[in-house]
Image (cartoon, rainbow, N blue to C red; front, side, top):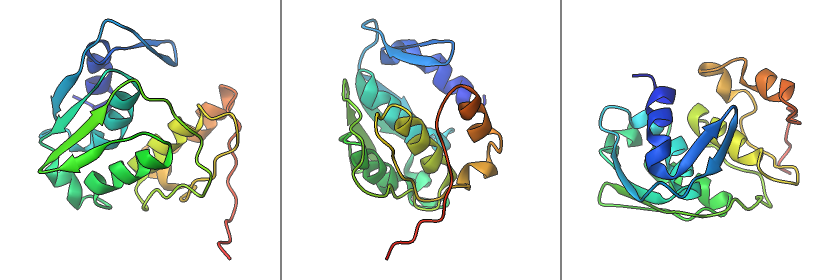
Length: 165
């Protein structure tokens, strides 16, 4: 199955419903343990979904540490930048549920990883103030038209050169 199909199928059990392009809480879900042994690329977006839904534990994703970056530790750090708490210990990513996104106050580090950048982009769309992400074009590896689609849906997204000095 494709990643988005796996996530779509999990949404009701996670306490979330997708209506059109809007993801919203649904009290019908419950805390879940999800084995990503065969879908480790989903660790970052699934962790964000768990944080916004009923929460859960991700197991079977140790090999996600060997992607473009260490997605196990990177996922924890990325979500914390948006005020979403999670821990990774002994091969388990534990994510409390019913959390709320808080806009980052600094540049969001995406670790040169397109899945982390795309998750950060989606989380940024929930913020009322501008969010600056590192890695403006990382999404092009998997979905070159992502920004154009989000812009056509009304999102204000722009790319610029960030000078850290």
